[in-house]
Image (cartoon, rainbow, N blue to C red):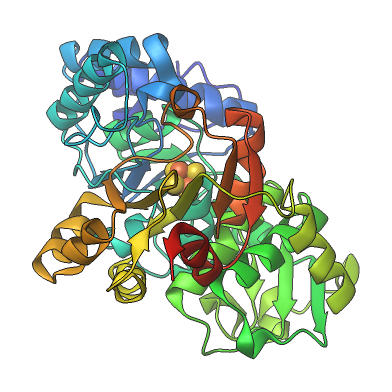
Length: 415
Ligand code: F3S
């Protein structure tokens, strides 16, 4: 007996479900079977990689920690390479960031549990820039909405948007139920977006964020197809675009014609079928969404936060070069978020010195939304990230100014 209403299980999968491969695998498989039942999956499929979203004690709390520790004591081991999202702390600088020691202690326990399961401790929301070697056509199980977007839309791997701890179960079993974006028919583009008079060739990363936010919030559960983004778009620009699209709505896949591997042409994006809807984005709408992402216009920021998603080495180089010979203003914090591996490269390249020399802080492996900002009493945050601009007011009770990276750096420093 499989216990699954709709899903076929092989003899091996049934054995796992019946506990013949140990308790941890049994728990993980039973969760995945329930997931498959809920989505009427027909069977399980192998995955090549997992990205764990349930990384921060500040989001999964005690129940999540207990689940992970329970899985470790039940013998859990990841069957596929698995990277992991930012944690609640910078493991080296939690004191400076005023993270309470109880949170740090719990986060360290969580990290130990993941290491025992075999995670690659990347602590980043940009795994695609930090060693997650996945490729076109592969099935993977990724959590973290911006990473899911990137895997599907830029690399052409296939993943659903996995919630916390489902990703852990998938990594333990090395399989997921086949539904949603694992099926070719659900990857077809259904809503066309055309850009009218937008100066895309001059777009900053933040402009791409604003455009992504607008498309994600308009598309809802449809699969957007965007025409008009130049092939010269950079990985960092796509990172900003995807993070914001996945913030504006449930967007996990967007066909960017000429960029997305499955959308070399418009016809390929729709698999030759008609669109359900067509939308034209003009300059007025684009400017409106940029304005709406700020909650205040002219108040001076006391926190400048850059690196959501985490900065790449290229972005750190650009930031460090601006900061050379400048100083962060008194009464202002400049926080730049990146992965531990990018920070280590930045150290070797002298970029860390430039950032810290100017009075900024390069925070590794954590996230501005997980840190206890209330303890700092910040009033106004300026950011180049549409994702952070959207979430920070609700989570941290601050006003937000949404601007491009250069304006953020100008706001942080004396000229
Ligand atoms: Fe990453 Fe946190 Fe932004 S996880 S995408 S820095 S909200």
